[in-house]
Picture (cartoon, rainbow, N blue to C red):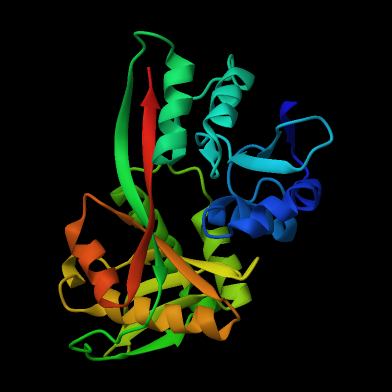
Length: 280
């Protein structure tokens, strides 16, 4: 049967529900993308309509793998067998994409199929998905306190989101003001405030399929190294659990040993490795 595609988030959730529910951590990004589209429309995450992919091994069979693309960003793969990754590369051939993201094996299989024998592709980013196991408080606890962000924090949060995107090399495809407003609206954005001034922020996604993902976590460069990021990350992890998340997840850049060590001290444990791949 292979791949089929839709812009309809309701159809995607309906058809893929059993597949998504079987591995909500592995499918955390497709789940949160679909939830955002359902709440805020097909262009809430970029300049073009989100495109969802569903893979069936046999006609009429269950959906066994998913993928998602939020233009102009590259496709992101959920957990999938090698056969599905190869078929997705063929299904997307002719589509102007510059890369692919996903679990390490499936992304590599996609890249090899896309470029063909002798083709060229490069891993540009390595990240690891972590799950909160036993929460641990930051030590030492820095001065200040966490609080839920309000509408008055939106301009600062939007500026920090833009700076965060620049730090990790993400193209400015997102309306960060709208993103900050959405997160304030459902109560998922928190700031750490010291001396009456916000010094760091973190957010959690809406709870969907029992999971919520922490992102972004940001502290301005001049305020780093003081424990603010750890404190606000711990606070927002508790907030996600209080909101009903059975699994609290986050991605950490493996090129940043400081943040990966911090998250492990806070009680996060590795789940799976992921890569961003540039296609030639």
